[in-house]
Image 1 (cartoon, rainbow, N blue to C red):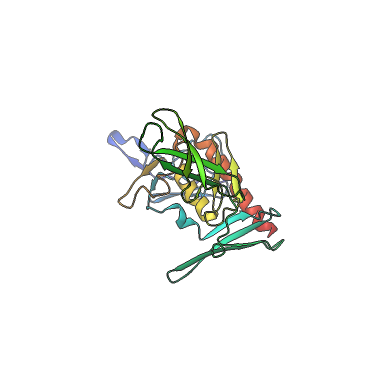
Image 2: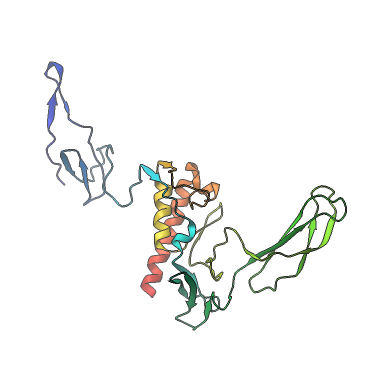
Length: 267
């Protein structure tokens, strides 16, 4: 390996000093660009890392939220077939104001569609009403249903005021379980999932993965005028945002990246 010549500048008293602090240690074959000086990469361990290489794996100094919501990444969602577990894609298609999502397994032919009101994932059902004992405003009930379970018409709710149970709380419209690693249209299990000791880490697709990596590796994360409470990065779980968890989150994202590459190779 060779290092290009470093020009020196003369300070007071004629003492020479480097024009820039640019001792670099980066991977073989990488190039580091600093001002007017170009330094070729070297693997000599005696050189200190004092500049950032132009490497795709290097961390970003800053992440600026562009306000994108989670669903903006869900045009193509990588999932597993509910019958044969083969990888596949839930595809969102738009025709003017009309939108629909469809899935068909390339291995076993299992299909699903929003138009047919298909939902294969878990649901949360719940309702609210005045307590029948103390009249407290709104005893709220919530109950999780397993995939394929029939939604009940009524649920029970315990009053937070008098701690008595109210029966026959009418069920409102079922909803998706927040944070569940399923696609948002049909409830199929996501393909790109990695378990961590903090909880599941998941992505809809490679674009979603890339944005998460940019966020996690950034040393500074800034909100902008585009940031709202709908922004995906505002709604990430707290454990993903902590600097002390960065290494484990990045390891999980690396496993997801390997899954994506493997499934493409198999497909």
